Image 1 (tube, helix red, strand yellow):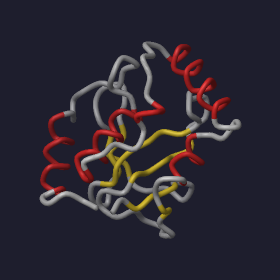
Image 2 (tube, one colour):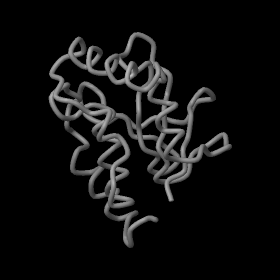
Image 3 (spheres, helix red, strand yellow):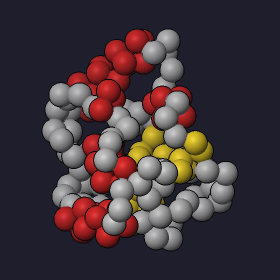
Image 4 (cartoon, one colour):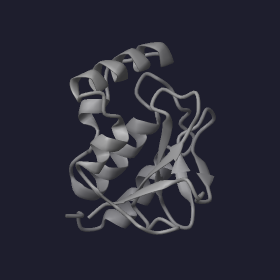
Length: 141
């Protein structure tokens, strides 16, 4: 269940990290979206998928180890076990979003819908992008 005042708290969080560059030591797309979900619900969704990695290589090694523990299922499968997908062409505010991303550790980039835009962590701070057809949305309740 979403916390009271989650919308303002979510926007405060997004504004506080707006200029935070994506890095492998604590602020990647997964840690960003996990914290955004935690702000909305009081509980993150990806603590098991976040490790002490410091580079793309160590993150990939960590992720492959986790997949092996989960019968080679990917993170999308893991999120499907927690949240219901939204069957929509656009996400709703607060939804978790996965966007296919070739040549990335998880094969997806994760973000949070904040309006008609989705916030994703990027090299020079958050990027605010329009939804795309291949995006996957999960409703956060």
